[in-house]
Image (tube, rainbow, N blue to C red; front, side):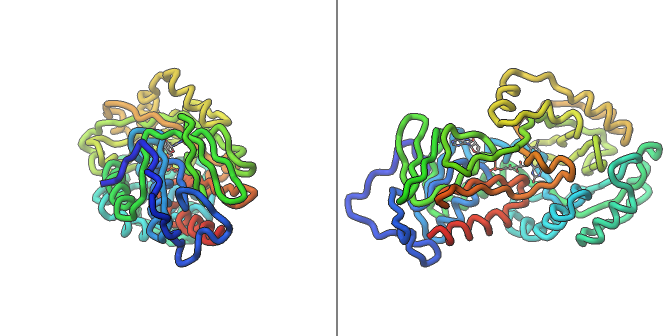
Length: 391
Ligand SMILES: Cc1cc2nc3c(=O)[nH]c(=O)nc-3n(C[C@H](O)[C@H](O)[C@H](O)COP(=O)(O)OP(=O)(O)OC[C@H]3O[C@@H](n4cnc5c(N)ncnc54)[C@H](O)[C@@H]3O)c2cc1C
């Protein structure tokens, strides 16, 4: 079981030898503090990075504001394990997705689901066309199979140019949380839930993390993984400038028989995606135009808009998606998932989803925004290098 502490760990009465990070003394640069590494934010990124640092020998504490891990965007998302098909305008994001796919599927095999027919289609008049889409998939090595007649017949040929069966999966967000808890437990990370952080300060010998209740946690290094959610005080260089923060709605829908066991994504522009959401009996329906209920420069503004209450647009999503796949018109909206999406602003034109990093001037604080779940391999590599270099 993960150790979920609300109080700070007791000071050891006997001086403990300092732990090392991959054989290197973490105290080498004069680090001081109760912990070698403090991680702020217990989503998929913070939790995974915390487990990795602890496996390498560091004493790690993970501070999460919510009552449970993976309760933010890591639950409220479409659960797609990207194979690259979604990013025909960003070869880098498409290529990295395809390159990471197998590794993600193997590492998280306990929570991925791929026993459904995953279908991509290109709309007429979209930002891509069938020829370009095929060319990008060939280039990145993403398998495309021409859709059989039974699939092609699902689409309205007046609005859809072409369709394919592809290799993409979804993950079960509840099972992913369990896997991450097991990883943290095995690695020996101390997890403190219900522990909002107010500020992180960089000192010459380490970092000081101030909790909302005034308690001070000290460490050699800090990793900030709050998905763009602001912390009141951060060292220079660590805040993200230029995020788009969108209050988002994903509809959970019950599908007619013709669509059960299928995922359908129509590219590339103001269209929709329909994917199984394995922790429920439903599918998620998201729509490029209707899922974001606005865009704000800060996470806090987007979260305030959500708290203010937003009227569901699920019926609009269903109505518009039925222009491409008429059977979706029979979908029944059961409920909606609401959360904030943080997207690097300059990526609007190409829709890229990079791992975004910010380092403090003194190098002891790294903030990391993963952009999508399957970027985890790249993020773990970067964080490992950062912690090693920082020693
Ligand atoms: C609508 C939507 C659809 C998406 N679809 C997909 C998809 O299909 N596939 C995909 O790969 N990605 C998708 N994404 C992106 C994916 O969800 C995110 O990239 C990923 O979940 C980010 O993980 P994280 O750990 O960085 O953030 P989170 O899971 O949000 O974790 C951040 C944590 O930090 C905590 N926190 C914040 N502030 C503080 C503080 N001051 N003190 C302590 N804790 C704090 C929060 O409580 C939260 O638990 C989607 C996102 C959205 C919103």
